[in-house]
Image (cartoon, rainbow, N blue to C red; front, side):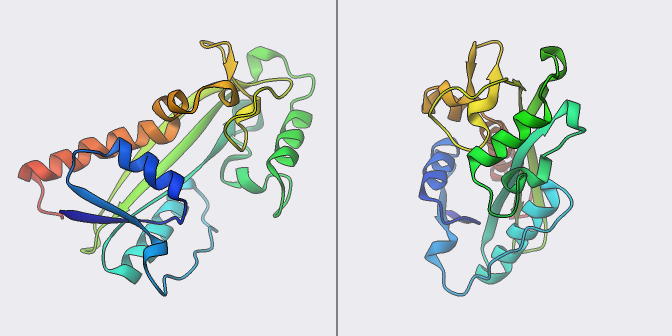
Length: 204
């Protein structure tokens, strides 16, 4: 059975990824199961750069395949902002509420047809031989004018899904995990891992 170390200590994320990669004969653990894994400063200029850096550092420290992701919200009207600064849009120690308020202020008066946005997730699986796999998933919506819903986190209360008539924060957790940008990226990773398992790749 292959082992993959997730570049996170979040057990909720571990359970989510375990469910999406089930049946692949892969043992998933987190960096919390290892000593001496250095903290990674996410100072890249793209989601890929941050995910790649985290995955490579964890792989080097553990000598195991490592999986990392970076994600955020890109707003069309703002040229892709907040993007890689999504978690610190309103400042380095900003709360979700502060980030949401700043984004709503930035779009004050902007009509609905120009409030399109997308959650984006980039995954990198870095292998001990130096090769890597990257997969990406996006989830489009539009920025609501006011927050709604108490579920989820981050920008979920202000990202409206027109086809559902709900914000992401109003979706049941199981449905969010099925539709999300991370779920889409992991579905692509699952296909890559199945291809590798079939013997058409000797990378791992």
